Image (cartoon, one colour):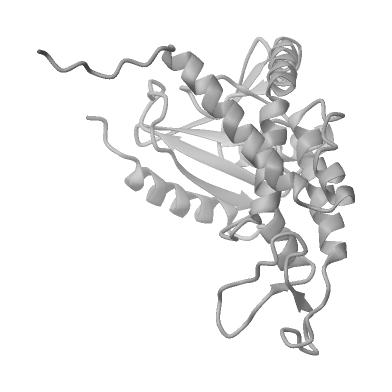
Length: 274
């Protein structure tokens, strides 16, 4: 008699939904083991309507829990205060120190930043919140993409990579500020002194220079520096590793010579087309 093989009675999609629900409930159980005021705070994420709101909520939670931490005299010194996580009671495993530095190390532990081992309680709470808010985030991100595309049709954009769409002035400026119109004009004068040509096609601006068969595109959008990206030609494929370098605005002496030296090195480092 042939041996019967196991055949699950539900589809793979149904089983995945069941597992997701069980995981959600398990994480929720971890959160509910905390004191009432803590578990209430860890569940108070419904007002978040965007991913930015979610990040702000996480930071608020981490700051509040850090304020609950008690300083451990045995772990502390006159130079820094240290203590154990108020939720999981964990501390750093790096000998000879114990506990977490308050507030910085504690907040990193609660948020899971960098290489910090995240608190199991906040990890459960944050993952459940992210799961519950996913539909809101999807709608918010879709609206943001639509707004970005609408801006692309109306505002000036800058070509900084021939294989990618041109960029708005303030897009991608994570840690820096975009230039004002007046500062952008000063940057353009600097580029003209380096023999760059400004090409305008519709609302797309490109600052171009050809050097020994290589295309150089200048990106003057960021305050304080101009970034130069070097490509083999204008038919660069998407995902090609770029070679880039920057010149700071405060560099005045021997500008052309320093630019030429950096450009020569960059051209030599551009990968050859296969």
